[in-house]
Image (cartoon, rainbow, N blue to C red; front, side, top):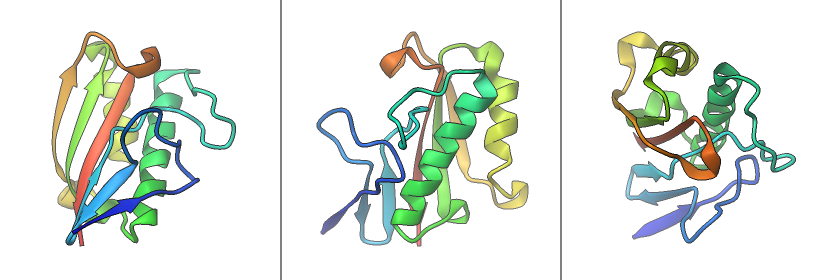
Length: 126
């Protein structure tokens, strides 16, 4: 049976999907972009600030499912410009213990929702 996970501390979905779905002990998150949930505005000051907002949104979703980044076992990062990889990776990496970091792929894409520069999704397990 699936359980829908929702928190007001992360942006509300902008389409026919949920922030996350818990199936048994496994959490599947939707991709998060850099929308500030307090005002609905995009955080696009620079790629570091954008990535930090994405990770803070993801942190809120994980917390709504009573999890942390330590529960994450797989992530996918979509970026619009691979030249931003090092900066994105530095911010992303600050949320994980390097020894227990999840598996991951990073993919450059032609375009992301709302023309953002980075989107991240995760899978976590209790």
